[in-house]
Every structure is written in C-alpha cells, then in structure tokens.
Image 1 (cartoon, rainbow, N blue to C red):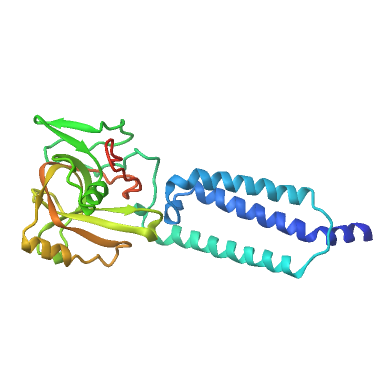
Image 2: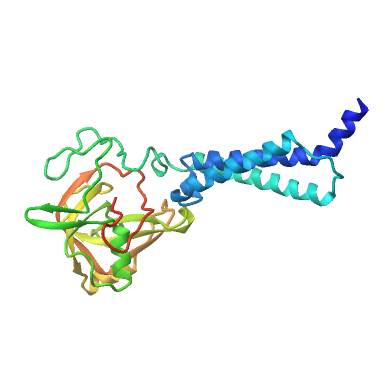
Length: 286
C-alpha cells in the first residue's frame, strides 16, 4: 500500500500535467466546433485549432497513462496553476460570449445556408426571398443587358480606400440598410468586416441612393454603380456615428456613394459578417 502511495506522489505532477493538457485540448477542440469561435479568431483558423486541440489531448492522455516518477518542483506546480487559471478565464469568456451576444450575432449554419425569410417577405420586384441552401453564385451576372461583377461591400471599400481606379463600373453586393439620424434622413448601406476576430472589426458603409422604398433595417442585394459625393455628402460621411449597440467602429466612405439600379430584399446572411476579402476577380462576394 505504501509503495502505491509513494508511486502516486512521485508521478502526481505528471498526472496533473496530463489532466491539464486534456482540459486544454478539449477546450480548443470544443471552441473550434462552436458558434462562438469567430468572436476570438477568424473562422478560417478553426481547422487548425481543432487539430492542435486533438494533438494536445493525445499528449495529455499519454502523460496520464504513462506518468514517469520524478521529484516534484515548486516551479512546475506554479506553471500548472497558471495554466489552470488561464483555462478558467478562457472558459468564463466563452460562457459569457455565448450568453450575452444576440442570437443573430452567431453562426446558425454552414457558409451558404440562408436564414429563413420573414413570412410574406418579398423583393422590391415582387419576387419571394430565397430560403435554404443556395447554389454557388457566378462571379458575374447580367440583368437588363448590363453585366454586374459580384463582390462584397468590404472589397469595394478597400479598393477605393487604396485609391484604385479599376473597381467594377457595375457591381452587385449585399448590405444592411439603415437610416441613421446623423445622415439626416439619408440611406446608409453597410457590412461589418472581421479581419481577425470581432474585436478587430470595422463597420464599413456607403451612403446610397435609389433605396427609398426599402424599410429601415432590411438586408438588400443591390445592383448598382458608384457616383461621387457632393460637399454636403462628404461632410455627412465624416460625421458618421456608431449606434449604441454596435460592437465595431463605423467608417463611411468619404468620397463615393452607391447608386442602386435594381434592389431586392433578402434574408439576413448567415453569418451577417464578412471574413474574406480578395483583391481581384473572382471576388469573395457574399
């Protein structure tokens, strides 16, 4: 009996380290598979996080099953205590994020799966809104004899911000439509672009024209082109203010507005945020 107790004491720190590694690996794998992952990292890193979590779990299991006797040290205990404290904080942050964020601020399905449409909702042209999985969209689409390049609002904003002149003459993109008070009754179309995680995001917007029939708060797919802002419009863009509930810094293009040639009301994109931006065709779109 005494020998077993001595062996447990001699291998205690190895067993404890194995248990901590199992907890850490399980936490990483669980977070990578959860709806809250994008709050901490870009979703494109989730496979890497999942793989690393599985490897760490295997290492922890090895230490638990085959611990090596050795003299415990105070430094090793302190290191293990620090890692345990970090895991507790990380788990608390995960739980808080899952509880506090609104339902529409998290993933509800894989990329390309649209949220259900509101009952009776229809586009401006009377067509019903698409529901369910959608087929891959072509990089260009022709409507009324005009060819439109499909891109996302962040890709268009980035091209203009870098001073590029090769942006598409006609484009189609999706955005959320609002009429903030600081715009004096004007229309704003915007999307939140997430570079790494939600803390590193921007709410990019354009003033828009030709959307007077669309209700505030709707998501729309706009076929249109750019037009320069006048002096009053540029002044309004510089006075852009975020809504109290917004989690990101709002930035409105100071020189150009979007002129809608055709618009359709669509379901809220799933997810509603943009994570991918490309410099040239085919653009990421969505």
